[in-house]
Length: 323
Image (tube, rainbow, N blue to C red):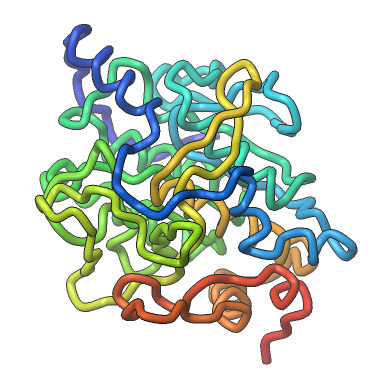
């Protein structure tokens, strides 16, 4: 199958820095916030996922673009994958974040069928994460006919330096071909500068911010120097907010772990979208977004530019109908 992939950026060998960044990426963020509940599975309850399971457990295909997925992690149904860096089917996760994100998706949609696209590897650093690789990953998803795409957030500076707008064009192509793209509001360690991360900044992407168990905005850095991120996206508001603080998932090998970040929050919304798509497999991106919006309730005290339509309720979502 022919793919219109843009040549990837050259890799930079900086082993000491990479190891330090990867070590930080696996450590929950140490921000001062209200104590979390004893069970880190609060996120599944907060989006009311069990209320949907009598109707559906999300048996829908999902393309996860990131660091790959551990196919042996318990509870994950991985239906293959692709590595856009090596152009092989070697998609195993050697970073860890992709497996953790996939674990959250599966905690909401236990029967989701994952297709892992590896666009980030163990040598990537905040300064070298490639928009072209992420774009290639998105195109791989739509080439496979997948209608639900979860994408890692990337460094804002790197995206702005993408003169050919490779990533934006890939997002537009995915949307035109019927695929809904969901991405975190912040790139976390990959962030640089204030505002929404990429590709969440693009209008056709569902941008998700993270909340604490107290329904407050997750205090994660966004490169602006502010303790609390105000994800202002050039005039457009956030799409939704979802649990993003110390939520339960699993790492490579299957051990349970709690993670934080709006990438975790975006994974909840991806799982919720899978619940809806499993019931409405022919739904267009706009229909899925509208169903998510109708099932959402704004959190008190947070403006729309931080939470969009609010927190989605899975019970309402599976009962939703669009006109």
